[in-house]
Image (cartoon, rainbow, N blue to C red; front, side):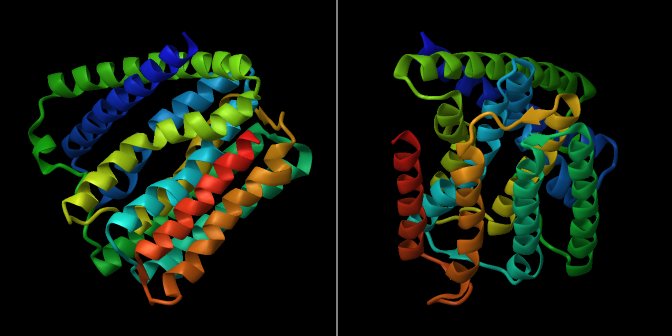
Length: 314
């Protein structure tokens, strides 16, 4: 029954996330927001909605370890699993903005998360507000740099949604919201039962099963695009997703309800895996092939992720 709840939860999160992105983008066009602003902010927030709902649901249920494990595990999976497998299939180019802006900001947020948690083993409401303020500052500079450099916007901003009626947008929003709400509820309940039945902690399930599940839509889209020899995934978008997970998901969750460090392995081990995966991206972008992440580097990332999962369960 627990596995069934987890699978249904995953399915509803995928459906809910898709409809929420559609409604958010459609509404943004109605509000006359530029395609660039929609791509850099609205889509990023909408695609972080599954992680946000899961973390909020877990925090409300008193399962802070699931709320934290979901974000930490998703960020590790984004680099080790999504980027690793995509690079194995199709070589990724690295733009200069990666090491000049995106990577340093991701490192800053990752290290800040460690110190905020290590300080008193809690992410308080004040710290949550601080993360949201930092995110707003990041978005300000992100949009400013994009306008200056005339950065092309990712393909996920479908211009056809500009013609959507308010009725469609409202229906999409209702479907997306309901699917995300019930999906997060089923997933957290199923994960809790699954952890009990297999004899591991809630945190172990959240940092592995739940984290992979919330990364599945991004992983599937990236692999399909790579197999088609299309632009598989933007490294900048992937890093942006990690920043949003820390700042918006944990920030908003902590504002609603403070997040406590329940499992000591979070601070003794897994937070260092999170920082380690972020750190390794820089040398991989330059050595031995400059500004390129190809098959062998993909195997390194995927191998490191497989090792992380093995050690998590052991």
